[in-house]
Length: 106
Image (cartoon, rainbow, N blue to C red):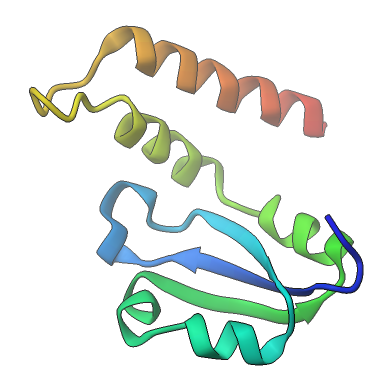
């Protein structure tokens, strides 16, 4: 994470199905680069929560992702793209990662 970058915090919308509510951030070279790349199709999938924030603020904001959204994303990650079914082994690992990350925050 570089301090002189333009940091933008996003939240996935319902258009991204299982990832709805997940908060994340991306760093851009500058505001102009962000504005140029934030297309209408991305705007449907990613809502801006904060722009031009420090790296610390970006991380802190992303950490506010609701627990339920993280679990839903774990289920989404566990879907086998070939079969459309949940792979239990992947699900177990993804959920364990969410739980461990939550415990480390406390």
